[in-house]
Length: 107
Image (cartoon, rainbow, N blue to C red; front, side, top):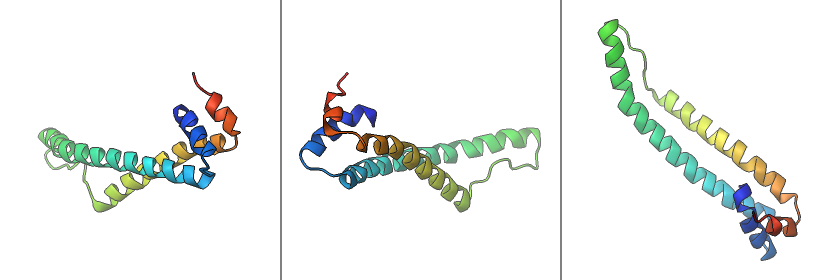
């Protein structure tokens, strides 16, 4: 978000209000979180049988990892919670600044 402070400054100078900025960032966070969730579920589905087979070769009657709808929901909830928590906190700080501060923050 700090890399986008100039963009936020320009948007605010054209009349965008803080709720508009929150909507933009929230939508971006949602897209990135859902992409990360999809990739993580794909990795889990690929690696779970491999890990279970490896441990079954050592200890035959053990199933180490099981994927349930509840575990998938927990992964989704944690992903969204972390993304929105750590994505919106910097935006909260940026919305308290003056528009000129946004635009001057060019590195």
